[in-house]
Image (cartoon, rainbow, N blue to C red; front, side, top):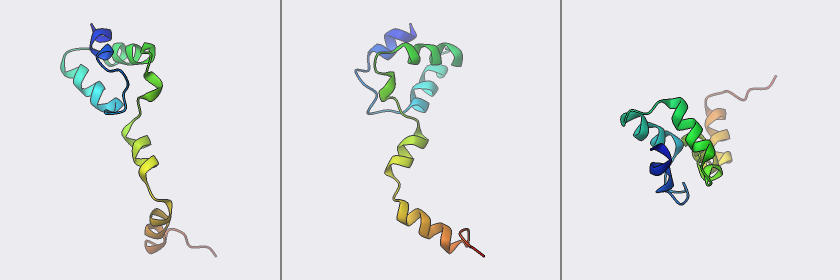
Length: 76
């Protein structure tokens, strides 16, 4: 049943792991079953978490400047 739902996705470029997990847990599936089904899916390597997507889209220079403004980068 879970595999049928996951097979409707050719690849996971338009969604995140959290969205799929939340959708399937609302339908009554356990987290263990969902994780197993995702791992067995052919396109499992294209499924990214929110944190990975956020990290790929982050601009490193602006993040460093934010930390400097908060005085997190002090050296002595």
